[in-house]
Length: 324
Image 1 (cartoon, rainbow, N blue to C red):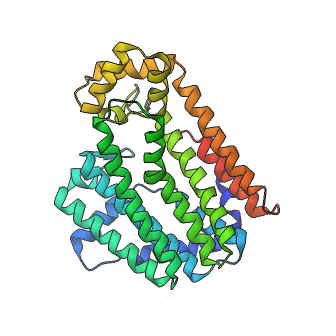
Image 2: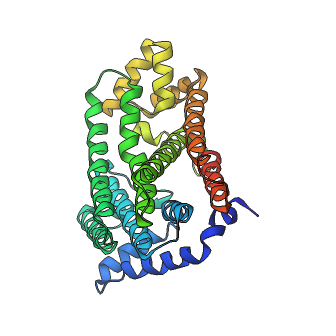
């Protein structure tokens, strides 16, 4: 059995139920909106977050209608945040596909994101759970807070690992944590188990983001060179932060400041990427990622072994070992 099949095996039926509910949530009589949503859905995502919701609910009980509505709500909120992020970052691509704002315009992108966000809240309400509604509402705050924290960090002369982790906890880990906590709440677990589920999701999210950040330092199959997208957007991630702090190299620090200001040249970015790799940045980031993976596995070991546990272990392996 391959990794994908192993991960999905305990929730095959429920995953189909999710897909039907998700599809129905996006139907509209508005032709423009339908065209935009059809474009967004061409990305064919791996449904990482809905799968996690369903697996955690199965870990603690039987998947309920509230579980499915929570999964739809969270996936819609995630999609809305990506559409809005592309406008904020002035990005023209998302995962190798033209962004909504590139094909249409910023107005259409923002309004589509607003529609997805509103639909997310509709499904949060359909969980009939005040606790789940609070989790999803707080997630919306965290995602915006994380973006603003990242923007405010541009003027910070320090290369702070602490701020880096603060940002990814709010921008990425908070989403995974909301998935796992909502899932646990949907099957009415104790407060202690809900917190364990939340932590498990947070650790997965941190692993996921560090892995994504590492990708930016290596060759793109499409471009044949390091993408450097994060630095082009003024973001310094863990490999560069580590290399800058461990070497205190004056040239690298000056370029890093220009990266934050958005004035670094493509050649300087390419050299800073190579500098980060040569000074142990990738190894350090991978070590940190594996530390969080082990923390997640430790939480999983507190639950009796089952096919769902094996699926969640495979899920963690996928997050850390994936190649895109």
